[in-house]
Amino acid sequence: MKRLTKRQMRIFAIGQLGWSMLSGIISAWFVTFYLPTDADLKGGAQQYIVPGLVIGGFLTILGLITALSRVFDAVTDPLIASMSDRSKNKCGRRIPFMQYAAIPLSRYCFSAPRSRKSATSILSGSPDSSCCSISL
Image 1 (spheres, rainbow, N blue to C red):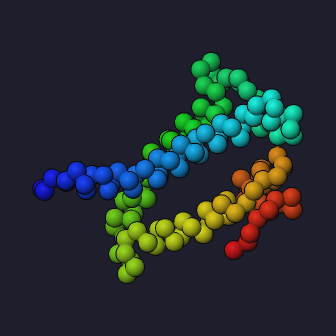
Image 2: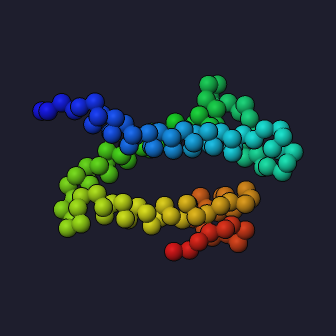
């Protein structure tokens, strides 16, 4: 197998840079949104999670949410990859999976919860009048 040149390695690294930046932004936003500062609370922000709440003596709520999402990824990523590798679709192996995933995920991209009630409605999949959403 031919070794990659330094230039090729940099090109692959640039592709990963975008994903890493997105992951970092989401992680920072996640904590900021769910654990607002006192100034944010005085400004009207809602507090969805009790700060400092520990489950089982060692795990916080945000830690539990993050851990469960990683376990979910660890299970589903190989399953989807296996299905994609075996795909015989005329459009290619990956494109149909991306197309079908875009439809349900677009609901979450264009939905902005405005209250605790609307956030719950979005997660449960039921429409809510106090939620901005674009129907497809």
